[in-house]
Image (cartoon, rainbow, N blue to C red; front, side, top):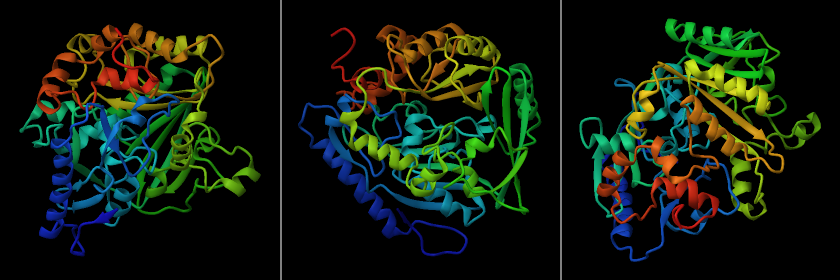
Length: 459
């Protein structure tokens, strides 16, 4: 990653040379797309491994590749307007290190250091400021998009607004995101953590709603350890700290949650507190951590899975899934979960309903009255023979009018999928940005090709 700067002490600003360099990259990608003659699907080659659940037979590994790995510059950090402009291959680790020099951070910082900014838009990343601001994409102001035909579009709420909205959660099926501008927030050097423990889900939700309404904390997430133990993790910026904890080697942050009442972390360490694991950390033994703890983190695990994908299980893969439940339907969902699944902890991230996203159908939105969702994340659930927990989650979500991210295994049939995701708005943008379906459509890419299945569900 390079920072486009003239070494101004107050602001990273793009110079004509840096703007020319960015334009040259965009021209290269656009030219590759215009000159493309292959009829094979295309997807993106990136600097970091994809932060999706690795799958054994994923057909996307054999796609023609559009190389985006050099789109890795921070172009501007503006401490006056509190905005940042980057190319999409820049990682959140790189952005946080750069913005913290100005006392700023992105509003939404996903838990893993090597998640890229572009990947965060395409996959709808969230985190512990989501109770205030929604997803990372809700903090974005402008995109530059290269279409499959090699045209370059500028997209914002006022210019190509439907393209701007539909790029969120499109998983690279609507074009190449080549630049983005997003909002920042002022940050103190440290985060003071306090932990509130509740015996019931009702009390836990009441606390979430109370803090969300009062806006009296900077960060909020939680973990559900059982039907009778729910811990709410509350973070507040602070200029001073009597001590700081680090969880990047022998200790794991997720293991501190149920046993501490308070904690202090540097802001950088807080933002990536889950980089070694959200609910479970390997190695689990102290000896193993002493020897390998520095080597086992999100990036190393994903790179290993990507490189050795042939050894991933063909059947009954472990479950990694994020589901979004309307706040008022959470008790119904968790009653089912405690009875049928019983895998703990469950990571819980409150999520503000900032915008009724165009990529979900009006029929789906008509069943949601809540101002908040709860994102419930289940990691590492082992599937017994004869059960498909992924499909069971999808069926239960239909019952409680929930939805899920598409980074995991997806078993929706085509009709059900498009009853949730808005086919009309998706196809309207697809006709503009990828009329020849170079990048596959969203259903085929996430529900068919990812599972090693050719074509659509009718074939």
